[in-house]
Image (cartoon, rainbow, N blue to C red; front, side, top):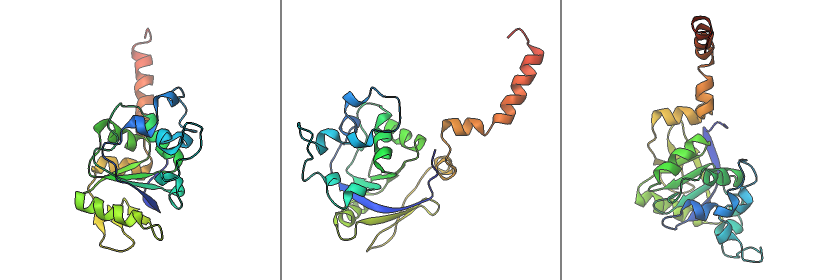
Length: 201
């Protein structure tokens, strides 16, 4: 998993309540088990018309948001089904951070397991960041995970809280497999002892 420490990039404003995982990646794209290639279908039914052409006024179809690395979204982001394809699609598009006032639990957990930082802020801070992101002349935000801050182009720095264990995993690029591999020596010792003591297993 890619490490996350600092991120500076275009923030796209999506001030929509209850963006669910089916909106992020519709069900017809769930056939793959590969994490790559889903970015082109992120928000598919919002980005494209029936004939495959782009919806002109959808935010991710507009400059400079085609290159967004951050989303600033409405309340209850990631609700709906528990599909892990949703963070896969965000990541494949280039989104490494989502900022909202609240997240659905399963989506929130899946973000950390895939190298995406979900940040919870107050409604007032979210509204200010939506305004920042809506300024097409300068929509960049800077995320500093070490210091747990969001630097705005114009305005006070926003601080955020994060569980220390989740922070460590992002900083070190550790998903569940990576965490397990940290204990590889102990696993080898255990297996060697078991083979000696219980050879019938």
